[in-house]
Image (cartoon, rainbow over all chains, first blue to last red; front, side, top):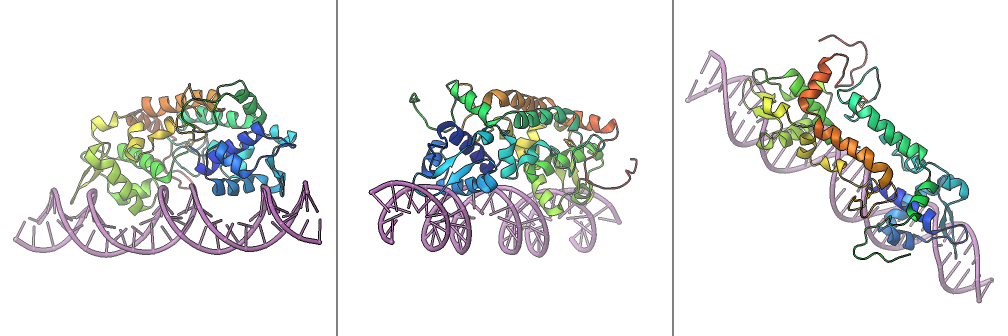
Length: 152
Length: 152
DNA sequence: GTAAAAAAGGACACAAATATCCTTTTTTAA
DNA sequence: TTAAAAAAGGATATTTGTGTCCTTTTTTAC
Ligand code: FES
Ligand code: FES
């Protein structure tokens, strides 16, 4: 469905929104551990997300790190996908035709179009903040750690 | 969503089911043109689909080619994805966690699970034959050719 | 039985995705 | 004002996906 890049981008952004703030920025080390992803690769992905402060903000130097502004928290999840150039999942033809359209539909179009619509809704109508709230209801996970869950 | 390999696999299989039969087998040249895909690469993919006659059947030599048995036509679309090892789209966590489960859900799980269920339904409950029938209703497309459509 | 047709198979080429490492720049705190 | 901390950036390695080409095997028709 999504590339590793997009998956790490989503997990990292949610993690930063979840655990960090403008006063308590997170370092790449902690983020990578928190979502268990490869550190350097994740750093590269965060660079994409911080371009023009599109989604993530960052500050260098001691006490620096990554965080999300209140503005950014209101962004739809789709904004994360756009930053890593993968928002096309919500427009593509499931059989890989160049265009997905009603006027030139593939044999799966009729069945797939409703699913695609829901995918689109999910990524466009869900804000990063909503995911944070969902997580904070408890019993949600953003990493792969095994064993007993330590309470927050 | 799907790799090129899976997309070509789907398109090729549908095309063969559509245009061919045991008495009128299709050659790789025609198939690749029909779905417009790279010929040699598509040939490799068809090899995966013909392993153990899982989905596609083939005969070598003059008058040989690819076709689908009646049994194969009844297979779910998922069988094609399995042959190219991509059926996991219908089980994976959208954020890339190792497991997608109710007991260890990611923050998008609640929203995504219904979409995933529908994807699963689509691939499991739709047979290749059904797609052929859908196509034969007219005005469906399996290639990217531009311009006026020539009637069959 | 021989030649031609067609898929199967193997080797290789190229590109993109994934991943690591090291250097540079910026920022802060002492 | 200097040392340390942290992200940014650049170079490179590795793996996977995509794609091509050529040889081999199988089958059929003559
Ligand atoms: S044309 Fe294929 S999904 Fe719409
Ligand atoms: S756990 Fe992420 S989609 Fe189910």
